[in-house]
Length: 429
Image (cartoon, rainbow, N blue to C red; front, side):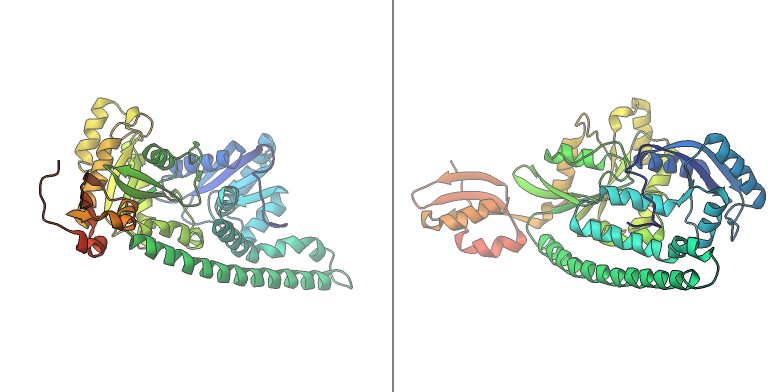
């Protein structure tokens, strides 16, 4: 992005000072801990923080006048290079703070967008990031031309500045329109692919959960994949789909972007197509970090539930999976079981509980399949190959003079294709 949108990830770690408003009944400590994780992901070094307790931000200055003076002293004392606000600033608030402190000011939305930009790899993901950045940047473009405004009126000052500003705004609006059109087209293709996938014979499972709870590690453990699972927020942004096999039956599993406590609403909308991958599954696994305190765990689960509700995925069949159970004492495991008796306790690190998880997933989809016994003539080799391609678990096979006799569990949607081969069950040698 050009001037006016700050990117901090490509530089050496910068000294970041955090300022926030603590509203009534807000757990500001948890929010700031999450912001600290975001800063580490963006390669920033937090050097201090200032909190003001009030119900609403000051309209122009965000903080009250006394706290603004205090913040100015703190910024000088810590030699901070960037001020990070744990809210979304209005353009006027951002301009005021930048003019007052003469350092860069980044709000929570800009920080998250910067991290998204670093972690988006698919073509669609990059389009989504660019669209969200432009929509964020458009109302803030005025600040890019303040150097002309300060020169006053006259030829070559304010007039050209306004012309250039309007030109940039027009170009940005044109680009936003083009990006929305491209995303709409890719969205149609994705929905078609999703429909084909959900109507197919391979059951689909989606992983949902707070960021950094081990979703990617669990996907790797189940499928043998090597998806990046480093301990950073938003390490996985683009949806990743892999397959795993249980008792001869194939299942697809999709890892989606992790959720956070204060995901700005605009970002939920901008990344709806990414989040909507949770809708493509026939079953959702809600992954939870079992090693957290009860309060932290409950807050993260509520944050996930809120976003799932926004995208219409809150009514999908769901299984809660408590990951990182290897970090939990036997006493706390029992407490977890008492509180969440239907949740599965697993460890993607030690593989504890993964066999049980596969069994539970298979049982969920068991009603989709019907037991059949087939006699496929040797001349129907193509039909036999197609049967194996379905990923159907073939429990028994016997080669006879008439053909290949098979016992299997076929998807109901595919059974009609093999009716002509069905025979009365009899013992297979």
